[in-house]
Each structure stands twice: as C-alpha cells, then as structure tokens.
Length: 47
Image (cartoon, rainbow, N blue to C red; front, side, top):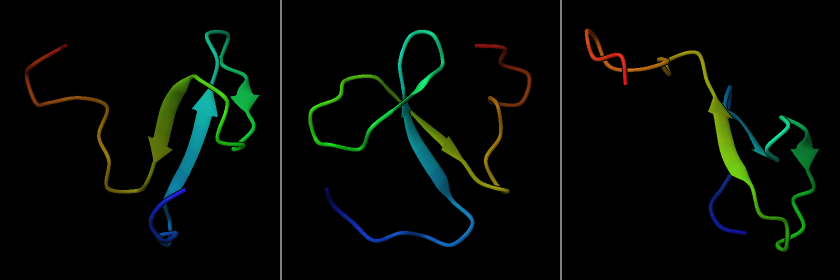
C-alpha cells in the first residue's frame, strides 16, 4: 500500500488464469496496469 491513485490508470493483481486477486497485501500475482498512454511493447521490438 503505497502511493496515490492516478486518474485514468487502472491496476489489478492477476493470477495465472487471468482472474483478479484481492488487494489485501497477501495475494501474489502479476501486476497489470492499464492507461490511455501505455503501449503493449516497444516499437519494432516484439519482446
């Protein structure tokens, strides 16, 4: 639990199956972030 919410940014913790996990300070998963200015990757660099 750190920082302040930023407008237009959504963050979730997801498990291996893509299900949302609770923001309880105990769940372990991948942090997924979505915002209008984020891209899927780098230009001309697939991974």
